[in-house]
Image 1 (cartoon, chains in turn purple, brown):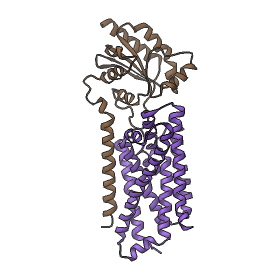
Image 2: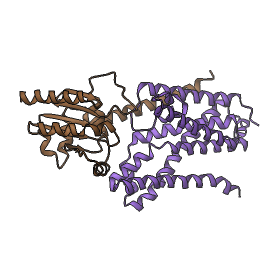
Image 3: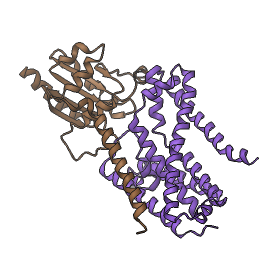
Image 4: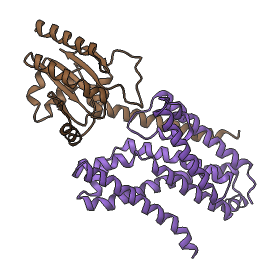
Length: 232
Length: 186
């Protein structure tokens, strides 16, 4: 029963990813009538520009870190003599590994569906823009670290809900400001700023500055929470 | 020092982001890096196009950057068609460049009364970015958002002799005048 509980989030995540991959294939093949290598390039491009994956990733990281907090895992590490600095590095390392794992699962979903569209997983890899892949990796890493910081701050599964609501509100506000008021102020909001890492355009100096600011802020906040937290 | 670890990780992260961005930038402009004349990318695109490869040697290019969703782009089609009728025999090639697919454009043309008569290059986002970069007005915002459509350029013997964004009767009259001068001097 316990194993089933632990495996449920990853199964749900896999199904969601398969569905999103299917939509990409459907748009590429069904609507744009692309085939072969062109289709492989198209779906790979869409996969690495997707913002919705980051939402699922932040959920995943949040619930994982909450589980490790509430189950006493982090406290156990401290009891075994780990320093808080080491715990911080461990959390970052955890996000690095989970981000890689997440991208691997995403690739598996696209690879599975590729056989239904007469392309091979190798063609997907050959037509991947690796810079876009790394950009997606950095984006997921940033939102994942944010998720872990939230989990350390308030270790409860209920935190998924405010995160989701804030995600929606920020996205809506950014889009409203851009479309209705022709203002790019929305780009300075935390999640919107992070989202600029992925997309078709190259980053300018201002965008890199904003991203650097939020990245440092997330790591400093995560570190300060770990340093001050009473692990129960 | 308590901030040593987060700052180190943050700096490594930022360096990696910048490095990745620079590599992406180099890759994006690789195609256009070794150009001798600014119209070389256009000639390259034409050479790679089965239908238009014979036109790659034209002396003057009139380039229209447009999209089917752009209202002002639609308004200027009859004017551009008229200019094409007037100057098409003067070693001047009229090309429209769009980021959309051929299928999308053909579906749109089916619904229109004014069909563009000039040559079309489809799905050319990178070329559009390059052509936007030829804008002599450096105050125009570049980066995340697309620049203004329609944009019309005239490139003669490797020099931008006309660059205007947006549709207006004056812009079309200016294009006419520039093309007239070019056709007289040829």
